[in-house]
Length: 218
Image 1 (spheres, rainbow, N blue to C red):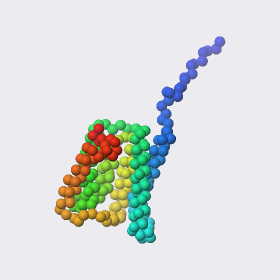
Image 2: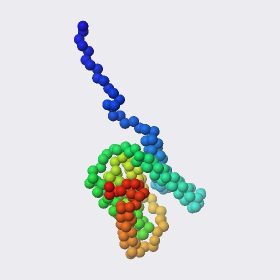
Image 3: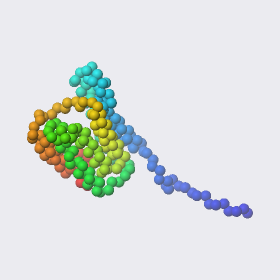
Image 4: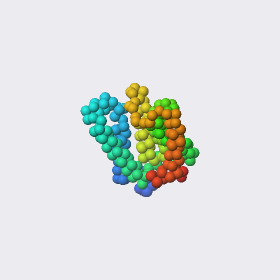
């Protein structure tokens, strides 16, 4: 008899922790990515192709151009909502934020609504921030990336953060288009701050849980 053969290691499928992407996960990411491309793409025309945007605007006219723009943005937004909603049913965790990061996220979100209101209420806040909507978007995106660690969160909020950064950089080389808003007034800042904080409190205590099914307060 020859020497005994060493025992061959045995493997079972149960011992292999290889993540397998399900059809639902693929569909979820596809819908979410399509929504982000469509929504952020329509909001990036002035960034990547300002001359084409101006030519199409002149060719189609104000009404038809805004109509197409609004429809494309709305379809993209709906796809984002659907895709993100599906992703929440089967979340893929990339990292788990510690509790203190969630507290920091709540602090970062405090100026978001005042900044958004300042876009249409010109005053010292708008002058100091220069581009308050983009600043609000960046704070909102960073805060949610700190508090959430799933693949869908990184895709959604990371996408908006990248868009806001790219748009802000592009504004150094192009003029910002005029936005409708109230007349300049010394009261605009107070309205933006008080109204924005009231909206933030409403979202924090009620609206966020009602709209998205999750309370930011845990």
